[in-house]
Image (cartoon, rainbow, N blue to C red; front, side, top):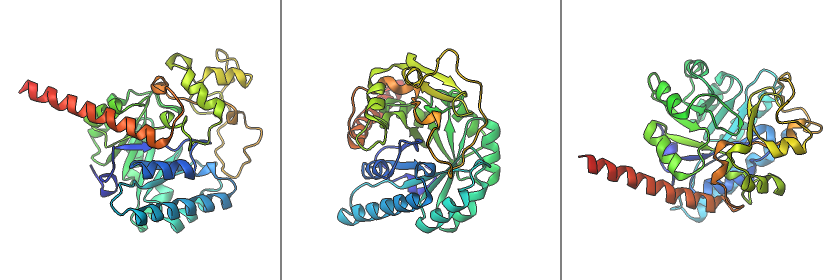
Length: 322
């Protein structure tokens, strides 16, 4: 693995930053469970709320480490929208400099605006990318790693196969690769690592947890739905995303005739009121792995068991071939 921050983990998983879902409760629970916890800064509005969230996370993790110095506690990550429409980016970046998250993930824009600040305190920058063109641009800009959002991802999604994507990137990049796209169990985590990734981005699996900010109806819908209940469309936010068909119907949309692509606007200074994407619910293709609503710690327990089983299976097959 490419960085010490990522070696002391229970399993190589990031509880992915999810719009309107991830907050300090989920980040703290994920880190205390031994994985990386992350949240998107636009979830915290206005800016004073972001200050409170970052303080809560840093204080909470410091207390956990002091209480049990031997515990496996993962680092936390802040996800910043670097799209040109986000007028709050300078304020977000000032708080990043203040609280120094070990990992900063950039999305919907170049990582370049954040690199100098994050590197100044020893943090690492991961750039969210969906194709080789964006991956090469992010590497050229100085990103330490790439969060490769592939086909099957929930929320904003890519179109490339996860395995083909990581293979193509490894031809020119030996830094950190986080791979996401329909991976929702420990078996998939092991497969991604075997294919060349360092970490797995897992979002949907953590939505139906006690620490999630999702509505109870959203959590239950994930339990009830399957991969056939997902539709990909750019008609809601302006960027292709994976949506649960029942939630689109409940919000008044026809899943077979969604609106034309609206103009993209990712300004964290905008109010969340009267935004159609607030009432539409996303899901990745791994939704079938969800059987009930539980806690983040219980999810990680299950993932670790599956991951260890898969690693043992791969190791056993390797010995058999010798």
